[in-house]
Image (cartoon, rainbow, N blue to C red; front, side):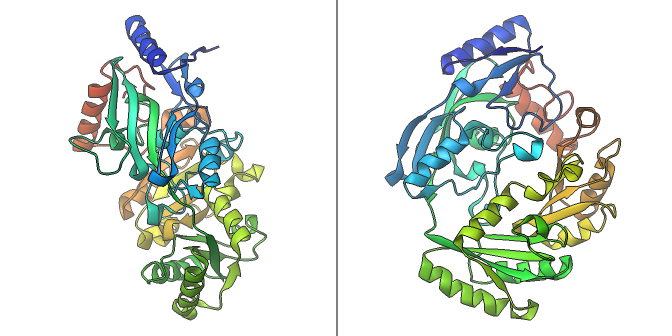
Length: 403
């Protein structure tokens, strides 16, 4: 059974890393464990559990800034800002259910370490775009700080951007500062029913290139859409957010833009919020046991290539599109490589990158879970890793084998 260290503050984290260095013990760094099964299987029998580093340390709604310890539950942060009429605009997804865990177990630090984002990514950006400051401990056992509490304060290297998406392989974040934004007064979703993938892509492109300020666009093929509000047939969804008069005006404009694609239907605010929560958390590939056990891939490509990419997947694969076609969630039949050869061949041909989100540990140990790195990019990544963690004790091989 793996040992666990549970620090109470940043100083404890620093001392834990220094001890691990002295003992030659690699550390599995865990926030609250909701994404533990994402990535290559752990290479350590010693866990650094950051759930004790919890609590909001500063929140100034009028300044749109919040600081909290890295292990603070993300659900707690979202509830706090919601009370003040604000939100985390990057709409971080909850990986718990899709990985077989519970909803609401993720941490704020984990959201930043994984650079999470949801359907609003096409408008608001990902977690790294809202990451203002950090206090962290490197693999050298040294505490450092970067950034601050305002957006325009970066000089030299922006280490927040470096740490976002590093999955705890470079440094252990102990306290983070993020930007908050006003929560839209209302929202509504415009739906087109019955379009095939190619026609849906054209409709989403028309909407996104219009002046309607669409904040989310997704297409659910027939069979997938049934998981969302009992939709019958394929559904192409477009979200409008903001003040009520603005939403009404843009809704009418969007109806005109979409006229060549059919007569739209609509979700009011409550149905819209529930629908996009399901898209964010990949609802169709969580609930059905027959699907929830299949390998799950997260594929990012140019929106114009989404339909061509899914055409290269096996006949019994299932998928849906987010980010106006630029993000594809796909489940593939079970196989020795989890479909890695097929996915890598498709992204090589059409451009993009893919992450194996869910598969048995044996599969995740045998294939590249994250997009393979070659040449100059692999060299740079190795140098960055060695700069932060020269002994390789932080989440070793979590992202790529031997690194």
